[in-house]
Image 1 (tube, helix red, strand yellow):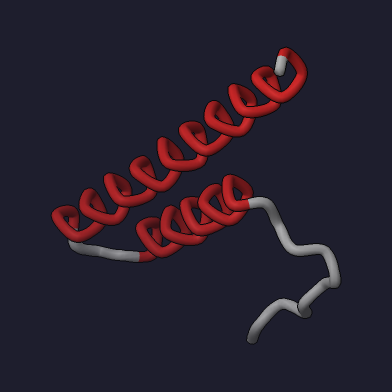
Image 2: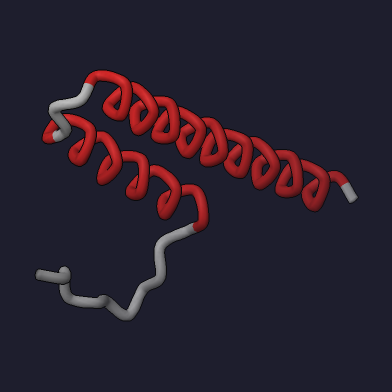
Length: 67
């Protein structure tokens, strides 16, 4: 069952964090340790991507204020 759509689109970093959360939920349900670890690794990569996007956004904001 899909969640209802809202008018406000999540930021890119929020999207990656949400996907990481969903992947972790799937990993908890997986009974094969190797597959579970692969999903957890993927979720970690999504989290890092979100952090990178936040850092880039903050750097762009700082540059706009100075520029």
